[in-house]
Picture (cartoon, rainbow over the protein chains, first blue to last red):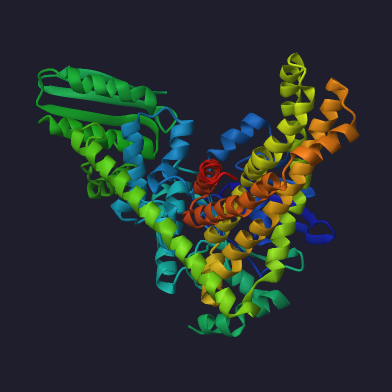
Length: 253
Length: 376
């Protein structure tokens, strides 16, 4: 089995009185596409935010690429942040910059590459995520929903990350666009060899691209493993998730 | 560390690449390659050997491909050798991506044509901007007529809320500035008037200057900074979050629901605020006259009663609705102009305050000229 890239142990999260996670454990291995599943309010996005140092759990330990992110030094954290790319649910592109500037910003800040090379890299990333060339000079407000997702994926890829964190990458896309986006992620993973951690409720993505997944329910991880392993579970959360009318259609096929 | 080493063999120029070709390190090798490109000697073939490259990422791959193209452009036959299977796959992928991108031609920003284009664009935008402002005023007037035809549609709650927000809550800051203005005027004139033994005229000075000119102007400037800017920011954020579009789809005309209540509220609140500023400003002057010139409060008050014609107070207060209309209209108009990015909120808020203060002063100047001509 390959090395663990992200591991979370005994995570407890509380927002005021509201207990969100009670002893959550999960492990993501190198090179896989890992899905975080669960109903609304089950704390999937919260877990993701804890991995990328936007939130601190009340207790437990979080390790990303071998760094203990809860007790990390400032400089180490800065290094770690260059090794991952994050795609936010709404894209979170900087609205005052063009798509090309959005992608170039980390390259300009963190490397001393000559400007023409940065331009080439930016154009390569833009074409890599399937955006048309003229999109480079557009502002985020001028893009369609699907293009925003692609542009923010290109931005997440700008520093050749080792891990890609995706928060509901296919939400807000039509089924055709969502499938294309899933295929894009798989093909990029093949070429670039990164690990993907994604929060999703898209059953199609779960069936087609996710290698391993965990399902959150009752403030815990109710099942973790490959899809077949997870489907063995008889936990009510999994029953309702995969054997609801939307799930059954898929499992019959 | 990324590095290159150049060797010539017969008519082959062999460039040995080594080290880690990554985002962090290829910056070192890029100037070396540039030098190699310009200094290349007698050769027909260029071989880029990447056998000893340890790590390779998108920056390394793209740099290598870029220079391969540049050598090709100079007429050399270029070969990339020694790539591992993975590196070959990466290079092939980036080659494909780069092939689809072409450099676009742009006008040189310093050329005369580009400058003329810029000038023309600015001029057209200026004319369109003025037209848009009139369109805004027209829409607002239209909504006002609707109010008159359907008085039940007047948004009284919104108007009262705006009066509280823009008027009542502004009283402390207006009191403070008006008091200080009274103090400043009294101090300056006390010194001059004392020289002539004409101290009693400080009452005329303060009474007329404060009520007729200073308190309307100071109140308007405070309100433009406080409420004009907040109107722009509020409407701008509502536009970005599509709240204004949502209102339109529900049949809530933004001019009736957002713009008019603000304009009406400010037009009601402003004269009252000016009257309040009059009182506090005179109080400030009275206080200094007492301290500096030993003039008793009752003496000041009785003199004020005989010299301050009521028309001066009215002139000051009449200006209120005009100033308020300008400030609120500009504030709302600029708010609607905000485009879908966060930077434009800041830009339009600044523009709104600057425009409002300018318009208020211009309007005040117009009042001065007209009233003087009329002999009021």
